[in-house]
Length: 402
Ligand SMILES: *Cc1c(COP(=O)(O)O)cnc(C)c1O
Ligand SMILES: [Zn+2]
Image (cartoon, rainbow, N blue to C red):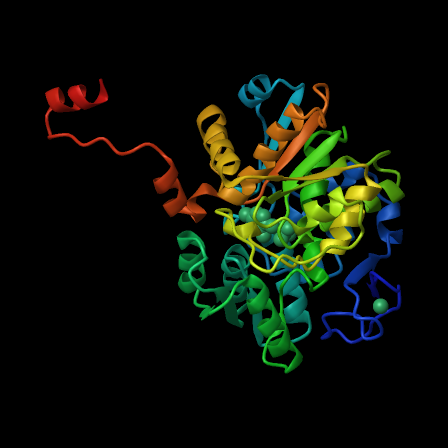
């Protein structure tokens, strides 16, 4: 069992349709009752295949009714080329681009849509920089629900937009940025038009916890020293923190990795707060970055993220668009791993922090690479080498490749 509680004042919340604490307006969080899990040993979970639902005792919905596309179970790559290039002991990449719709959002969405069905909601919706809408559209299709997605106009990568359209969602382009789209979507949810499935819905982060569980599982319960991930709305870093706290409270792990959040330089309210040593942050009015998935000025879970970073002795820094695109190419060309720009922020951040001496050379680091390279083909086309052209003869092809 579980309780929905306010992250700020701790009061219990009963109404399943509110998106914040009725008393203080704080973020909601789920307190899992870990009694059921406490009778288990970690290896007992391995009776189920690697993936989100292996960790059912840690999820607040009935696994036998899961709306699932077999999400999670993504590869953890040991990046030996990258490791020697950067000059540190161990770098793994958790490749979330291998999820059913190509991003980690599927982990939260399988749980969120299962919850929507449990509540009998006929229409689900979200605001999105792209991946949330791609994911929700697919799970809504699987569950036979109507899906409405609000996107910031002109700022959604082609692959993500195509997915939302393809799975049959009603796609609404809002003349504004993500933060505007979310404000409107929350209002629509309050008016009962749709069930809100942004990460402000506390059931979403519960599913997203499983990326942390899988990393530890795949490393055979050797907890890495540090986990680096891109931060937009900050749902993911908060979920990862919660996951580790739950396993630590059961004694399954004895410490929590330093959680290290990376933002894009033009969109870095939490990095600014971290530099100031603050637990709160000032929203950015006009966030800008090539990494559209983290182009967010007012991170919904920002306060949870700062707590995650401080409590684990972690860190936060920003990287430029150029550093992001360089890191994206480096990962592709040295490791054969294709990620979208936002995901490459974690690699760019690692490189920067090793240079600055924040990450020690003997650390064992896991970078979470959140989304697939195919999400944003336009950025790849712009940032990679030009295409060679030849006549249909061997001689001419030999000439151009010389
Ligand atoms: C959503 C998303 C992020 C940001 O995750 P948050 O939970 O909003 O911090 C990063 N990368 C990709 C590819 C995403 O889709
Ligand atoms: Zn409260």
